[in-house]
Length: 190
Image (tube, one colour):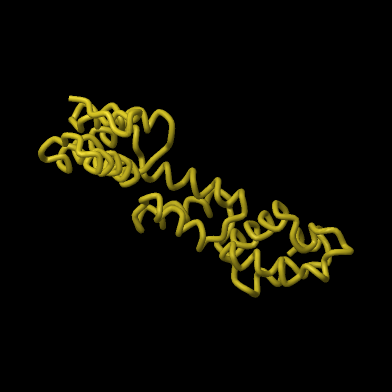
């Protein structure tokens, strides 16, 4: 039985086959963690319940089985997801604090998150402090802050630049070091 809502939207009943297809479709389009996929499927169930569509019994058990199937098949790998996402966030200039927050929000557990951070340091051949500095420089470059800003605007925009670095999750001392650098070459040396 398919229920039509508001003359347009069709809400399908929640069955194991529907959940399997929804999970497959989602994973074809987006990388995900096991917890992320679980959230997506639970949203589908809540939406169906909101529109009074039929929902199978033991839906949570079915979701767990489906998620486990994808983990066993290798389509979901939390460790690989965390490492890839950490690498991408670092390139964009995300601080360690912001990376951890985004990965936790994506459903990465603490142990896997720690492994991803260590893996990132090993891949970059740096210690965490140096990684944080390179991320801060990347953010400043991308947002044209501090030494990447036109010289005539630097003094007037200093506080704004420091605030942008703080919102990016960087410590004040590090943000000050990057924003107050004389020029881009001074950052590369430090």
